[in-house]
Amino acid sequence: MAVLDNHVSKPGWCCNNYDGNGFFGDQFFNPEEWIKGLARMARLVKGVTNVVGMSLRNELRGPKQNAPDWYRYMQMGAEAVHGANPDILVILSGLSFSTDLSFLSTQKVQLTFTDKLVHELHWYSFTDGRAWDRNVNDACASITSSVMNRAGFILNQGLPLFLSEWGVDQRGENGKDNRYLGCMMAVAAELDVDWSLWGLQGSYYLREGVVDMEEMYGVLSSDWERPRNPRFLQRIASLQSPFQGPGLGLFPQYIVLYHPASGLCIGQDDWLNTPLRLGSCDAPRGWTYTPQKTIQFIGAVGCLKESGPGQRVTLVDESDDRRSKWDLISESKMHVSSQSGSNLCLDVGSDGSTLVTNPCRCLSEDEECDPQSQWFRLVPRTRPIPQSIIP
Image (cartoon, rainbow, N blue to C red):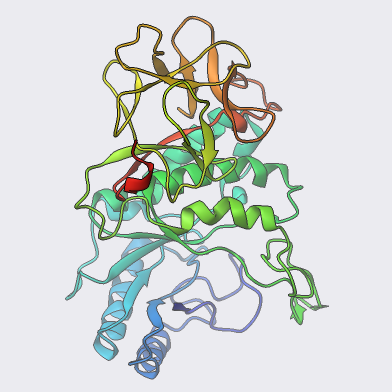
């Protein structure tokens, strides 16, 4: 599927606040010409079924940006695309480099159509400035709140939100990117947003005057012959299938225990008293988090039980007095802590897959500690549980 994106008016590498391409009325951004161009491109791809949408303008920005002009021209552009091609999605970006749609919380766009309108968001580690220099739990909590206030609330209005740009340094050497990635994946899974990754390209013929510049955020190697980081692709594969929809609302909602550091979910091969392991999110176990703070398996009687520091987590009958109660602690709410008084949190064992409990770590203050092996998000899901994994 392809989305056409009107990126800049004057060709060149994008973007900065003063490049003349940032907002309506800038030196190289004539609104009337832009509207004509949108309509022409929409007509050009009419009937081309793999072109599914048009993003009206990439990363509006600069000193001239303001909400009244945004409404005026984006509404005109949306109607131009719809009039020329009623079959494709119309995608609207916000202000401040496509990071801010907060003005829509008080005033929605007014269009002659509603059933194909999408809003888009860009989110990188550098979007948040130096916020990732703090304790990772605190940073994830505050940045997630900011993302919801700037754009995530769109989902509560019943409209789709497209995370149309995100990405990380594929070499795995950027500390801020590594901190951001686990948090971003948890948010993307919980909200079940659609997304596109920056970027595919491993290098450029020419970028900013440099011949054959390598793209460290690119999925492909510099020669475009192999993945730059196969483990990264395995990790994000869980986000490529829907957790909740569309079209899945006929099934009862349950939760999966999602581990963003691996991109896997907690599952199990056998039944009571056998160790739990991480596995594919396409066929996970279904769980409920009960009012009594037990984590209970769906499909049979069983609850999570911790057995001590470094010990494997098992399932016990829900009537068993040994079953554990769990609470979501730390600012990120991704530390799943046993309430036995032992200060133990769900964790992943040294084999990289077995579920264990270890002393909760990196809960606050410490700026260097990495808590992500202990991060689990309780993600709502409405996909049917395969009958083959129900005991």
